[in-house]
Image (cartoon, rainbow, N blue to C red; front, side):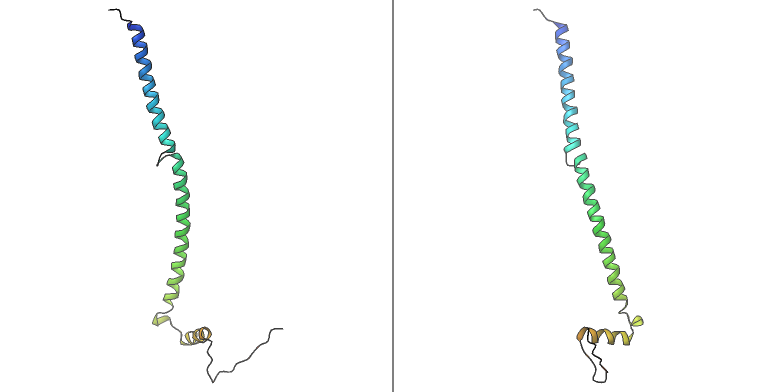
Length: 105
């Protein structure tokens, strides 16, 4: 039986290099395009920016409402302010009030 050890060793080495290159290529492609890859990271960063802006907006809205609620506490209520605001919202005037109508030119 005749064998060619030199040709066989060259083909074995080339096969191993080809398999290694295929594996490196596979992992490289997945590192770029996979669910947690570089391209997906851009989308995740954009989503983080959107959610941060929404969080800041909601914090500002929450502070606004907390301020309004704090005005309703008994120690901070001003009866004249409440009366004025209720009349403005209900479009109500007391019979003892003097009303002046101002015409716009």
